[in-house]
Each structure stands twice: as C-alpha cells, then as structure tokens.
Image: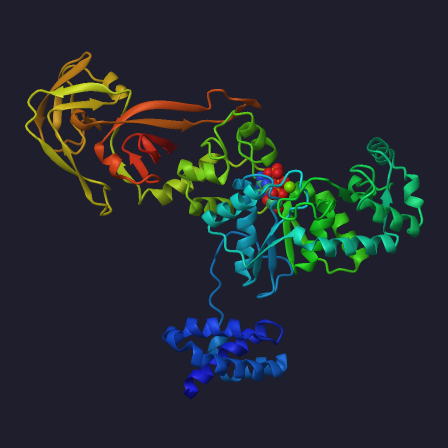
Amino acid sequence: MDDELKRVIRGIALLNASEHDGKTRNDAVISKVIGAKPELRGKIKEVIPLIGEIVSEINKLSLSSQKAELDNSFPHLLVTKPKQERSGLPPLEGAEHGKVVTRFPPEPNGYPHIGHAKASIIDEEYARMYGGKLILRFDDTNPENERLEYYAAIKVGLDWLGIKYDITKNTSDDMDLIYKKAEELLASGNAYVCTCDKETISKNRREMLSCKCSTGSIEQNTKRWNNMFEKYKPREAIVRFRGDMSSENTAMRDPTLLRIIDEPHPLHKDKYRIWPNYDFAVAIEDSIDGVTHAFRTKEYELRNELYYVILDKLGLRKPKMMEFSRLEFEGMPVSKRVLKPLVEEGKVSGYDDPRLPTLEALRRRGIVPEAIRKFVLSLSFTKSDTLAPFKTLESFNRKIIDSTSIRLFVAVHPVKLTVTNNGLTEIEIPNHPQKDMGKRRIQLDGSFYISGEDASRLKVGDEIRLLELYNIKITKLGFDIEAEMTGIEFKPEIPKIQWISRKNAVNIDILIPKTLFVNEKFNENSLERMQALTEPYYLELNVGAEIQFVRYGYCRKDSANQVIYTHK
Ligand code: ATP
Ligand code: MG
C-alpha cells in the first residue's frame, strides 16, 4: 500500500478520533475512506487491516496529541465547511459542534401529523446544524393505546418527510433499567407506593395534603413495590414521586411515576405490567440516551421542574429541555386525540382523508415534504401560539410544484361548444409552458366542452381564444353553444379559455377539501366532490402526478378517475 493512502487514512482517523473524545473506530474510518476514495471499494479487503492498524495507533494517542498532529499535518481537514444556512432556527444554547444529541419521541398511539413534522424537523435541523445525532425514540409505555400499526405509520411518515435519524429505539426496551431507577428512588425515600384510591389522591392534590402512604417506611414501600408485580390490581397501587404537596406547581404534588396496566404491549406482550408514566420515562431516557437538547411543546413547561428533580435525585445527567409552540391550524385539529375519533366515528374516510393534517393526508392532497420543511422553518421558534395559516404552507408548496406539474385542461360543470368551421383534426400542446416536459396530441373534430363558468359569461358576437388553438366568434348560445373560427393569430386583448375535445373527454371527480371545523363544529360540507372532464392524456399519468389544471388550480391524481384539489 502506498504512503499516500496511509496518509489519507491517518488524517481521517485523527479527525474522527478528535471529534469523539479521542477514540475512533474501524467502521467509522472505513466508510469515510471509501467516501474519500471510492476507487478502493473493490479492494476493501486489503485496506481493512491497514485501517485497523492505524486506528489502534491513533487510539493510543492522547486527545491533545491527536489535535496537535491534525493541526500540523492535516490543516486542510480542519477547514470547516461554511456552515450552511439551513434554517431560521436560532442558535442552541450551550451547543457544541459534534456533540449535540436531539431526539424525536413519538408515542405510537396514532398516525403522524404535521405537528410531528414540526417537532421532528426541528430536532433534525438542530442535530445537523451542529454535526450531532438525532434519535428516534418510540415512547411506548402505555400499552392501552399503542399498536404496532402506529410504530410503522410513524416510520413511514418520517421517511416520507426525509428525516434521517441516527438511532432508533423504544423506551419499552429499557424497562429493566427503569425499574432499577424506580427502586433507587424507593430506597432513597424519594418515592413511595401509594394505595389510596383515585378520588382521595385527587382531593389531596387539590387540597395540598399528604396521604398516609407517604409516611410509610422504606420496608413498606419495598414490600408494596414487589406486590405491584402480581398482587395488586390496576389502580390499587402506584409509585409516586415525593415532591412537594404544597407546591404552586401542581405537577410537583407527588406525581405518579409508575402504574399497573394489564394490557398486552405490542412488542413485549405480557412481560411487564408496571409501566412508567411519561414524566418518569422521558427524564430517564433523555438522560441515558445522551440527549443534550430536548424539545417539547409548551404545554409541558410546568413539568420541567419535575423532569430536572427526578434526574437530580437519581444523580443522572441533565439534558437541556426547551419548548416551542404547538402547531395548530384554524379549523384543522393537529392532535391525535381529536383526529382519532373523527376516523373511528367515520366522520372522515380514514387517516389519509385529504381534510386531515396527517402526513398521509397531506401527501395525498399534493403537499410535498420540502414544502412542509420550509413551512416549519419559516415559523419562528417561539412559545407563543400562532395559528399558522394553511395558506402559507400552500404558497411554499406552490413554488415547489409549479415547475414539475404538468399543465392540462379541465372543464368543470361542462357545457358543449361546437365550432362549425373547424378545420383541424389534431393539435400538439406542450405539457409545460417553460420546461421541456414533452407534448401531447389531441384529436379534434370541432366539438368541445368548456367550463360552465366560462360559458355563462359568453354573449353572441364575443370573440375569444381557445387556448393553444384558435380564435372563435360566438354565433349562438344555448344548450350547445355555436361558434365560428376567426383566425389563429394571438390577440392579447381577447379572453382565453381552456377546452376539452368532446371526442375523447375523460370523466373525473375533483375532491376539494375544506375546513373541517367551523366555529368548533364539524363541518358536514367539508369535502366537496365535483364532476369534471379532462383530456385523455390524464389517463397516461401515474397516480400521484401533480397537475396544474390551467385556470383552475393544482390537483394531484388520486386514481384513474379522481383527483384531489391541492390549492389555487
Ligand atoms: P397528540 O395530541 O397529537 O397526541 P402528543 O404530544 O401526545 O400530541 P406525541 O406522539 O407524544 O404526541 O408527540 C411527539 C412529539 O411531537 C412531542 O415532542 C410533541 O411535543 C410533538 N408534537 C405533537 N403534536 C404537536 C403539534 N401540534 N405541534 C408541534 N409539536 C407537536
Ligand atoms: Mg403524547
């Protein structure tokens, strides 16, 4: 092997070690070497031993000598790429390049929606901005609500958004550790097992009173804890954190840490029956996962005190918890709790019903992932609730899809039009005004459909242009409008309308999603269905194709005979 190669490997290994507390690994270096010298791909077997040798040499050096060698011998590697302006996100407090770890922690209890897009995009953008890591963690410790279907749906949604996470894990895989931490708190007197009934617990919380369980001995708590695994029934015993019953912050009034749920878990079946609640699980997981910056929506803000004090009592490292506002749209609920009943009661057709803010629905409606990302990043990182207008999302989307949407004609509420002296039998029309997206041929015989709205404006004697075709003069109105061709020259001043050749018109339905809730009430007319006619070329497009119906709006092909209206 030549010296040049050794040098390349050494540089890469040094840089990687210096970014990881002085330790590098064979696999990390191998992939980077291949990245830098793709021609080695076929010879990787010969290169691996060499990499192994160099890696172990470098791991023997101290971090400071690694850095010194990098400085002296490989200064070009240290030139940091100009930090790409990825977003309008403000800098992260206390963030160190290469060390930031964020996490997106969905509960697999429903389908992902644009609120999850907001959270996961922010998590990802920060991880990338600082050359850090993003963890996808399923917070699955409430088996009553969780289903395998939802884990999968969340992954599908994140993939569609283009979110790249570095690690995937489930909170439920750490149950043994979580039990250990619960036992630590019980043993140190920072938690106790409470067997009071629900009403008493709520009443005491309201009245800021401790219950007698809180004064029980550690032996009593240990015994009760052991009984929670078998003897107690659900709701007969919970583990409570010893907080402060007189705290102004209700979240601190001896909150529940663990409870009994006798439902099979989607992954672990009946293996566990004691489950941590959100506050306990999230604090432990964030800490042990190495999360440096954790974000959540601001309704959790009062629980930050609990988050930190749990970690304090356990002697665990504290991530920095930060909040942003929930994303909400006027008349469109962005919350699983509201979406689920709509689907289950059949008020909408499913999670991909185009009226919903679920990722599936947005996709089906023709909103593209890049638009969602731009939209999310355009919302400032604030805690104040701003009702984001859906129109803003639409305008980002329009800018992106405009250049890739094929132009077609459509006639809604169609009316017949016959050009009595039509001399053309075929015309070729470009699929996009600027871009080369091919052309389509349309057979003609002088009989057309035009849209009802255009027809309603016509008067006998009017001259108009059939787009891409010729000019006509209206000679007769009625059930079948008649006209004469007057010429082909382009006249800027006359109205121009689209048309469909009657010979080969294709029937489609246009689904138009409207606001789901008006004045907090379900809008029974939130999905309009309109019949229309379009060109035969429509049938050649793939499902999913985005179309701009000229003078009508953008629509996404949903099936052979249905499109969904995207936006103007
Ligand atoms: P939901 O009301 O939809 O059940 P949730 O917060 O319980 O909301 P999770 O699956 O637990 O849903 O959320 C995962 C992450 O997504 C959390 O960090 C949460 O703060 C964030 N998130 C959920 N909904 C929104 C929203 N509308 N806007 C912004 N972030 C959201
Ligand atoms: Mg939740």
